[in-house]
Image (cartoon, rainbow, N blue to C red; front, side, top):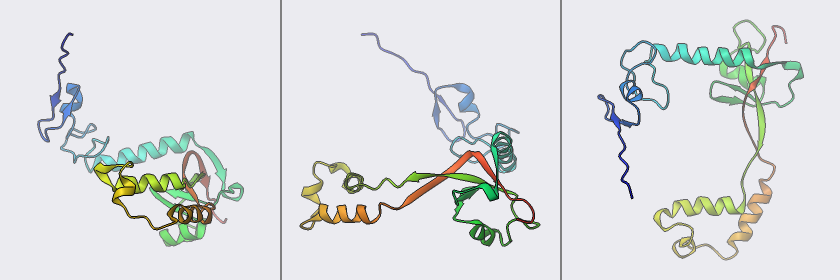
Length: 180
């Protein structure tokens, strides 16, 4: 069998390894201006360029997104940045304003409803993860479950089956007109 040789390139600043030289050279350097950049996941921008780049991405998303008038929006949840708001009142409280008036956000990202994935199996999986190296197989030996534990879990799942989660839908943006 032929032995395969792989070449890796190292960032001269932090020592991270990459499969290509360009990525290694730009690891800790802002890809916009060339200044040193703090290490971030997938965002090699300095503190000066990062807000500008985030704004460019937001603007591009906004331009492509379907515009939905606030009066026609029926999901209820809104996303601004990485925060979620249950209604316009909560959004207004966060920004200390009344939505639709001067100085308030002009838009928020629509959200899509996702089922809340709690099942007896997912709870068992979470407990198993807590068992670390022992894993699922040894879970019942290492963790002392009370008699009827699965019945308790089934009740918990049933009681919480109405729960929902939401995530931003960057294909739709809710527009707040002045005077809404």
